[in-house]
Amino acid sequence: MTHSTPTGIPEATVARLPVYLRALTTLAEQGTETCSSEALAAAAGVGSAKLRKDLSYLGSYGTRGVGYDVAYLRYQIGREIGLTQDWPVVVVGIGNLGQALANYSGFRSRGFRVVALLDDAPELHGRQVAGLEVRPFRELSSIAERVDLAIGVIAVPADAAQNVADRLVAVGVTSILNFAPAVLAVPDHVAVRKVDLAIELQILAYHQQRRATEAEGASA
Image (tube, rainbow, N blue to C red):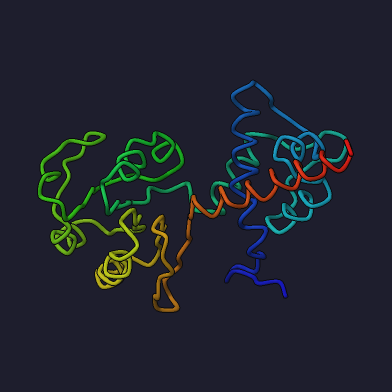
């Protein structure tokens, strides 16, 4: 069954829009002004038919025989996924991963602004990371009173993740990016995206093992 967002765009299409945006950004940086659906699909790593179907949900932005205007399509996709405005982000858990996320320059260039870094560890309080001072997690409520937090990033150990999620929801955060190896229970109106690096590595290990097995079979 295909699931759609409130705008009627399938979830699978929404998941690919940032990939198209990244490909368009690369093309723009290379000085490309127009590109065909085949060229854009190749840059994004998808089939051209799938790309054309995905973009049809946004409207008709291509010109037969010419292709897509890279700058215009880049703007339209950015607008559709909400990157034409500034989204305040709070990162909770400033260990190695949290610090790496806080220092990620791609946030700012893609419409996200890290406004607070929070952690329960006293030894981290007051430390400067990416130009921000690490504050105690207990200050979340007061920060939410000053800033309309849009997204909460959870980078804490698994046993602390649910409590962090509960606190984020309590202060009005409705979008959570979860890096903790834990399944979060949140209300229906809260969107959660889970990033489990261990699972991704295990999937790669599966493909690596399969290729090794096939190679052994071919050489037998």
